[in-house]
Image 1 (cartoon, one colour):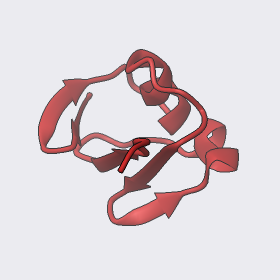
Image 2 (cartoon, rainbow, N blue to C red):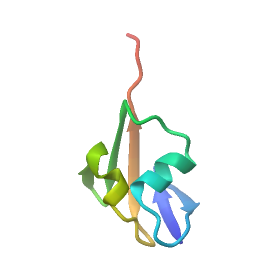
Image 3 (spheres, rainbow, N blue to C red):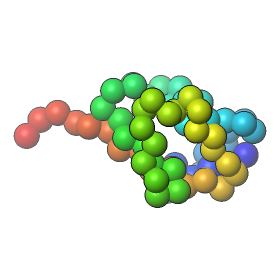
Image 4 (cartoon, rainbow, N blue to C red):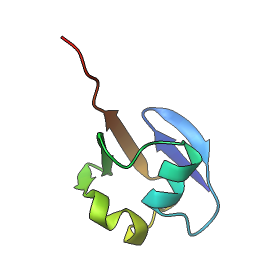
Length: 66
């Protein structure tokens, strides 16, 4: 299935969850905020939040510095 991540299409397997995407993108568990279709998904729900075909995913990562 195709989902849009930060404006770019990405192919994932059917039944993928937010955790599947985080793992595929090699993202850390901390310092990352994810919204699916405009709704923020807390890290505690990544394993249980499915991604459907056509989902719009926004990923923000915290950066350190000033």
